[in-house]
Structures are given as structure tokens and as C-alpha cells.
Length: 502
Image (cartoon, rainbow, N blue to C red; front, side, top):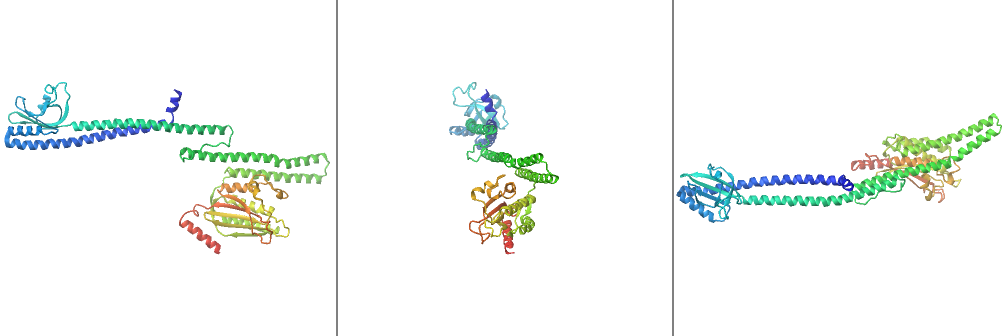
């Protein structure tokens, strides 16, 4: 009973029942409609046939009287057809005809109107008695002739009855076949759906038990279950990445922030043990405040990264001109670069419009420039540091890159350096927390773009071959207006060409 209840409560069974009921009702409606329409058409044809026979016999009666009518009826009786004839005298005796029995009530109606009657044909055993015999159906007209003669002309409806029987048998076979087919379809559909749902439930249960690496099965059919499983798997990938990031942040906080906290505690303990002068105590407090400020900056950066990754910064992605952001940020950092002896150049090859947040994009570019200023120093001290900011466009993408001629980052470390608190050995001499690229990557991901770290070959021709530097490239999709087809793309390419020419 539990298994039956479970089966009857499934969506597959309910859908099968709905479809079966709907098709059954439609089939019955079509059968009734076809049957009534066919009956009406055939009745009209029968009436026309009867009227034609009456017309022919009426001409013979008019020419030769009752004897000519009898001769015409007998001649027609001998021809094999479905027509019915009957001539009775004033006493009710049969003069000619092919009807053995007809109810008296029918014979009393002699006004010539169409009547649907039951009769027994002549020649059937026991037909004269009429009682207990199988009756056939017919359409007749009965007239009363001079001399109290009664004249009947009609036509048997056996063809119509046979057609109705065929239609009824066809409907029965159709309904039986439809029920069987619906049952078979429901059986396989129910098994397939229940199996898929059971697999989804089992995978979901494993994930709920803590196995975040588990994924829902995708058969590759492209059906609704595959699309649902694919979307859920993408969601699970995102959840797993966030949980992994949370674990990494927790581990990194525990390891990387433990050192400055321990150092501050040691400084305070040492100050308490020693009798410091007022100036020494002030210096100790100032150093402690500096380290506390650095810790606060680190926590603020972590919080901002988390908010950007969770898309809870309140950022509104709207069309912004990326060239304006590049010009504003570069104008701000150009004096800083000059004071540090860095050659700073800006090249705006296109003026793309993207869907983004102006503040976040400005901060991402500022972080890239600051990283280049801090860590993009050439190995050869005789080589002048150089930074180049380039904004270009290709196809439906805007490309923003910041290049330097420093030592660069090895290919093996380029993916790892985007994680939180990751600092390479070559950069540990400079202040920082290792969160800059993490924030940039979060901002770029929020804008549906990509962050690429490659070598910046050819930035400084005087540099040695091994000093290839680093090229941090942000690739962003254009706004819908510039990403449009036809005239939109043509206008975009024309604008690019104009910018390059200028």
C-alpha cells in the first residue's frame, strides 16, 4: 500500500492520468461528432433515394393505375438492393412488396412523411409472425391511394448500422490501445523520473552530510533534469569555492596575523617590564598604533574582498566609460611615479563602455598600479623602472593592462599569487598584506571578466632578456550597446579606428 501510494502520488502518474482523461474525452467527442454527422449525411442521401423511387413509381401509377404500380414494384423487388416496397389493399392484404412484418401503428400513418421504423424483411424464417424476430431499421414514406390502397416506399438502414458498429469498434480499439500505450509510457516514464529523482536525492544527502565535492549526475540528454543538475552543480562549485576561500582566510588569518599580534604583545610586555621614559613610551605606543593600523587595513581589505565576492557591496553595474577611469587614476599616480623615478606612460587605444561600478574599477586599477610601483623594480639597478597602462579593445571585449619591467612572476606562481595573503619571497621586503590581487580578482569576477598575468616582453628595450616584467591584464565584456550586432558593432569598430588615428 505504501508503494502504491508513493506511485500514485508521483507527478508522472498524475500527468499520465490527466493526458489519458483528456485524450479519452477528445476521442469520445470526435466519435459522437463523426457519428452524428455521418448519420445526418446518410439519412439525407437515403431520403433522396426514397423520393427518387417514389417519383418513378408515381409516374407508372399515373399511366397504368394500381396494376402498373404493382408491376413496377415487383420488377424492383427482383433487383438486389436495399429499397423497400409494400402495397396493401383495403383489407390489409399484401398485394406486392418485400416486407414481411411492419407494426400496425406505422401503417396507420399515411401522410407521406419520413418515418424511422423497425421491420422484418420478407424471406426471413418466421417473419410472418413478427414477434420475437430480429428487427431491421428503415426509413419509409407511406401514402394512401384511391380505393383504400396503401403504398410504402423505403430503404433499409443496414449500411448505417454497420458503419456505426465499425465506428464503435474503432473507438473501443482506440481507447484500449491508448490506455495500454499510456500505461506503458507511464511505466517507463515513472521509472526514469523516479530513478533520476532518487539519484538527485542521494547526491543531495551526501552533500548535506558535508561532502561538498559531490555533484549531481548529468546524463548529457539536455533535458530538464540535466539543466537543473547543471545549474545546481554550478551553484555547488560556487559554494565549495566560497567555503574553501573561507577556510583559507581563517588559516591565513591564524598564521599571518599571529606574528604582528605577537610582536605587539611582546613590545607592550617589554615596555611594562622596563621603566621607559615618556619619550620612549610614546615611541612604543606610536609603533604599536602603526601596526594596529596595518592590521585594521588588512581586516578592511578582507571585508571588502568578502563583500565583493558575495556581491553585497551595493555596487550597481551601469554603463561607464572605462577611458575616463583610466585617465583619472593615471593622472593621480603619475606624480607619485615621477617622484619614485619611474617612467610612467598611458596609452588609450579605444574608448570602450562596460557595465560596471566606477569606484570598484578605479580601485582595481589603482591596486595594479600600486603593485607595479612596489614590486615592479628591475633586477638591474641601472635600468630605470617603467610602468605602462594600456586600454584597448578587441572584438566584444575591453582590455586594460598594466605592464612593468620588473622581475615578474614565474608561471607556476601566477595563479597562486591571486589568493589571499600570498606574498612571494621577492616581495616580502616591501610593506603589504598580500590582498591586493585578491581584491582585483574579486572585482573583475563581479564584472564578469578575467584577470590574466603574463610576461611584459618588450616594455624596456634596454633591459636584459630575463627581465621580462609582469603584465596584469583585465579583460571585460563590453556593454550591451557596444556588444550589439550590425550597426552597433560597425559603430564600435569605427570609433576604435578613429581613436587609433587620433
